[in-house]
Length: 136
Image (cartoon, rainbow, N blue to C red; front, side):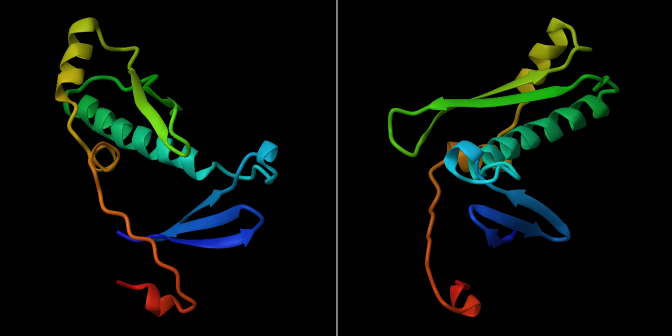
C-alpha cells in the first residue's frame, strides 16, 4: 500500500492513493488556511472508518439495519508532548437492542488501522533530493 502527498502551499498537502485525493491542512488558529483535516484528524478518521466498515459489514451479513449508524472517535491530550492519549471509539447503532449490541462488541476484530495504533511498529523516515532515492 502506498500513497503520495504533494505540497500545495503553506501547511496544505494533497494526498493521493489510487485515483482518490484528500486535502490536508492545519486549523486557522495554527496559522494555516483550514482547507482540510489535519493529519491527526485523518488518523482518527482512519480508525473510525476501519471500525465503521467492519460494523456495516457485520450488520449487513446479519440482515440488521445500519440506519443511523454513527462512529465517534476521540483521543485526549497526552501528558507526553506530541503524543496521543488513549483512543475512544463509540459505535452508535440505534436499531440494535442491548443483546445485539453486546454481540457486536464481542465480535470486534483487530483491524489494520487498530493494529497500527495498538502495536509497536517500525517507522523509518529518510530525506532525499531525488524521488527514486527514497524507495527502500
